[in-house]
Length: 454
Image 1 (tube, rainbow, N blue to C red):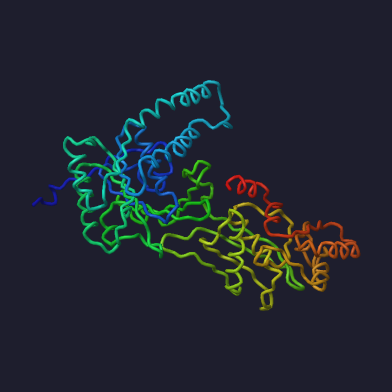
Image 2: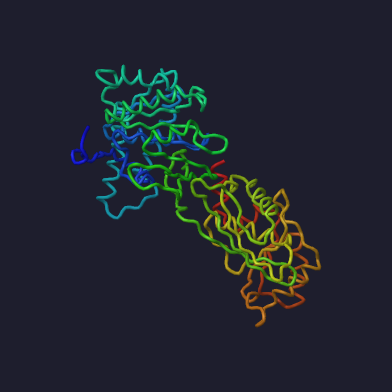
């Protein structure tokens, strides 16, 4: 038994992922630790296999031997995913067609790297192994002993990816398969082979398997889904600080994951109207922390109505904000009840915060949204009160800043007639039929991106 002074610190060597710079930021260590055991979990379709292949391909391109144990997909499916997604993604990283160069020398260097892609592909194919001959977790230790350790076929492998550990339908309560997995992890760690385990989650969002699974690994990578965004958390990390705030990834045109520009949530505000009062609506849409459930924080506002609005917005093409957290501030004066005319400014402020796009200055939104995203007309009496409320005056400084009114197309003619009678020609009236049409008017590039991804 060693005395305390005889015990040496354990040093870690890392295999750096130069083609995946966001990994070091997310995991708070420079790359995959040699002998480190990683668990990558998330819901179906979130991109777990894609991340695993990005990591494997990047390491293989630098001469590290990688073994991909496919327990769910066939080797041909894996190869097709690499050829159709990962290789084009890596090609774009080296040379963007729209990229501008500061000098001729820099441009030639970039072009030379692009010409070397064929050579890099050959290096990757030489160092990347795929094996699908396992029956499940129970066969992992025997496979490691026969084919990796000693003089096995994969004796020089530095990374083993198991996709996925529940790939053969292993029940979370089955103890024996996980005991074999832990034995496999221990042997791999002793040989300083890094292991990336791809795992499932339960319907409640918890990591599938016994609690001992999380204790047995060194680092947990947890991926969530929010539309095209992929929040990545690191709730356990023996090689650096944990990450409970998400690092936001986004799926590119090839289906691979890169760091998103949505680094930090931004609040937004819009102006609305209830009879006799102009109202400011503030919204902050953000990704929930690890362990927190999505929800709505909106004092003095009806939660059921807001939940309905979130559902209506999420039904728009290529938009899903249902898995996010909303903080909404809308002070209705005098304790007056919620009015349906606030539906539109609430929806626009939430979308503005989610898209991280500003609402045009001087905009006022008035209208009720139905379940089909249609902007319903308001009664003529409310139109009259609205036209009186936004007459520029020293008593109403907010009204002086109103330059655009967005309202149901059925109200447009009547509102314009009232403005003419009041000789108020400074406000432009926009008659809108649907919420999607309004988003297209405010942020046309958002709709173009959504259509291009469909």
